[in-house]
Length: 442
Image (cartoon, rainbow, N blue to C red; front, side, top):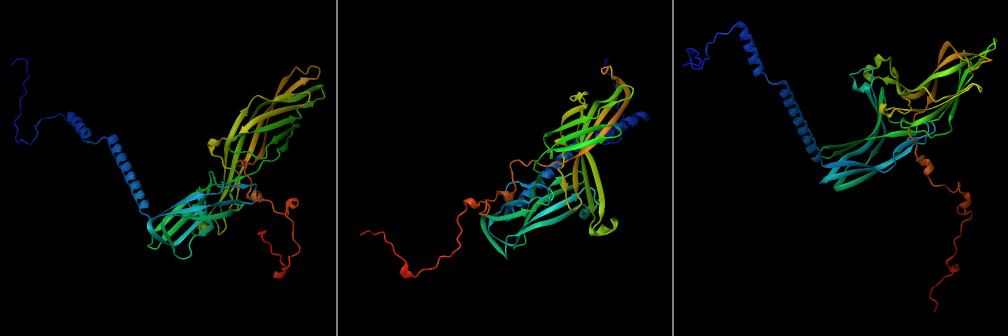
């Protein structure tokens, strides 16, 4: 029939076998690749399937963990009654801070018997550069600061909520909580209760301890830059804070130098930049198994780290007074809070965090004759003047005061308004000498 193409149908030897087509070797390779690509699962779909299965597994794990928690015979919670823990003044002069609260226990069953019931305040120091990286004992050391025991023998609690008060005077010499590139120091409350049936109920919460140095008078420093006659007088605040800027005042003198040929040379400030450096130092201790790597007990490996937590360039804004031979510079400096700066810390275990303000100035030399002081000619000489100042980075004290200053005054302190003192004791009179009074007037 015209217009219709006829293909010869090959004879099949078996109804289930495919037709015996003859393929070119090149076509057979292409055909095998197509079959392989068609039968292989899609990578993206498989990844999505894996992610879906992992998410489902994590949800199931969370559900199982929630079921285990709900199956416990009791639950614990913490109510902190004292203000945030802030240690005022330096470690040598601080009187500490009072920490108090209540540990709440919610009994779910009709009654529960506790064989052990206690809570600890722990200080955990985790070094990020341990002696042996695979050793947990080298990386973390825990010290027990305080332990509260809430039972004497077996403790029977009925269904409902029970409160157990606690208090502690945090010593003033303790280092504040910190997390820097070398070490992480944190304080944690860990409570544990063991029932008579052997079930263990635990509870934990991280406690943040801060230190605040009270502000005082500004610091004045003088720097000399030999071989020139330049001198810089700098005024800085005694403390700075992680959030907020602070003012730096600088006055430079010794700019002009008289020459014998009736001319003068003077220095002109071209550029100024500042940066705040954070220096961290820590000695990584070794666990008893790896003492041989550090040379014995009481020794460790010292680590130091330096990073910049704030910087800027000052190109304008200063005042130059050639007649009075001085330059006045005033700029605002600040710590970048996005870099997670660490406040100053000094501990007995070798941990030390301190800060410096580094100021660099570029000055250029100029020449001018005495009869034409406005005709200034650059000499081509320039110098970079660099100096640094110690900064005390601390938390803001706010309106808080130390706990010992909150006590009411005693009589010795307010003697003018105190009640009178009794030096003689009243002698007991016989009952016959006591006059009896009656309200009955009849």
